[in-house]
Amino acid sequence: FCLEGGAARRSSHLVCQVTILEKNECAGGRLDQRDTASQYRFDTGPTLLLAPNIYRQTFEALGSRLEDHVLLRRVNPSYRVFTADGTNFTASADLNAMKDECERVEEGAFLGFLRYMQESGVNYVSGFASRPFVSKDNSLLDYANADNLLLLREFNPINLVQTHAERLKVFFKTQKMRDIMSFQDLYVGLAPHTAPAIFSLLQYLEIVEGVWYPVGGFGGVRDGLEKCVRALGVEIRYGAKVSAIQTREGDRDDGGGRGGAADIVVSNVDLPAAYVHLFKTDLGQRRGEELRDLKYSSGTIAFYWSLRKAVPGLAHHSIFLTGQGEEGWDTVFRGDAALPSDPSFYVACPGKTDPSACPSGGESMMVLVPVGCLNPDETGDYVETKQRARHAVLDRFLRAGIDIESEIIAEEEFVYTPTEWREKYGVFRGAAFGLAHNLAQLVALRPANRDGRVKNLFFVGASTTPGNGVPLVMTGAKMCVDRVLAEQG
Image (cartoon, rainbow, N blue to C red; front, side):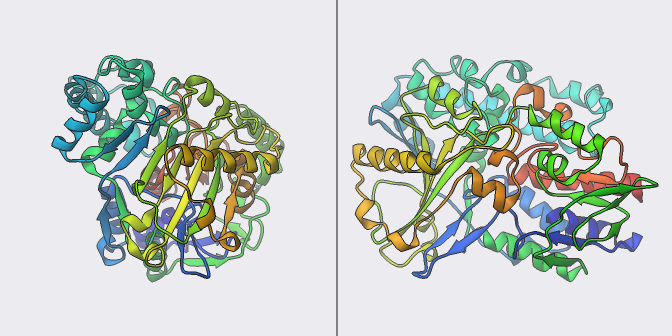
């Protein structure tokens, strides 16, 4: 969505006509919002806003300002972790408070935390400042150049080859503290024992740069971007599902559906799904078969509950960690629709930061349970799994002294499983975060943002470069626009 708008802004001197074909009745894709009859609001996709400067840059590329459309409020505390043995850990930007929290869990952990934040900060600054993360096409020169050599003065390359779980042993003595400092790897579709250590940058983002929330919900970000691109003359057609991307002589693409012929096609459908479901040529189908067998992130079962009463003890963002360790994570990432017997899960209660999310005294609660995504042939049944996940969540809440089942407004409850993510948003295999970010699928090894054979077919989204999560997808949109203008302008 934001890519096409960025293209309209940057290519106005080229007299480009940009048309967005959107399957659903509103823009945003997975960045969606739903309101109930009782005035409970739910962000059904992203629920926490990291790296606000990237959002600002996107709006600036459209000739506007983020602050003209959305009021950001910093979330404090950043999050609260509930471990399997009943320990609670509250993370915030308050160093005095963090010292108390760290030392309560592990003696001497605060000094380890400070050293960890220093390294994770270097990982973030070096990673996002490096040419592979900002280049339009990820060529060999983006890696073998003097600029990257200078980054090595501070960046430790072991963060690219060592797992996050192993690297954390340098800073913390106990498994409990390491678990508390690594659950964010789920954001990039990995587990701590499979994620490269460079993803400690996520902790730096949350603790140092802050977790933010757009007042009024993420729908405000979506609506602000739509307003900007419409002002630039971009045409948006809703309910326009693309049935096929066809090629013809001269490597010109036909968008299918109601799109007609196009000089340039940019696909925001999840890249593997685009090749598997939209390309009818032999070359497209062969590429689709190759992509089926790559490593995918987990799926998620998301429960959306309107609660009559607010829940004390929970933060805006709360994480409940399992005691199953690597075994539990391996079940989630097998990719066969499986659910651990005692799953970890994430809880969002936006009303704790933004009271407009729910009626006074109530609580809008979203519970995200990682589960295996659909099989490679996109089969899988979550009917029974959904009930087991619901029972596991409510049982874990009870163990933490939280009894909410009787407070759920039953007629307003709704649930998204990987099947819904696939059918509603075109996410291949229902893998909520797209392709995983293991070392073999990072940066240049990730599927490229332009097709290798059809020179005017480009891609954006979570499964192409540089990766998933709203900030990276926005960064990827800019990279793709730059490449379109360089190659097609």
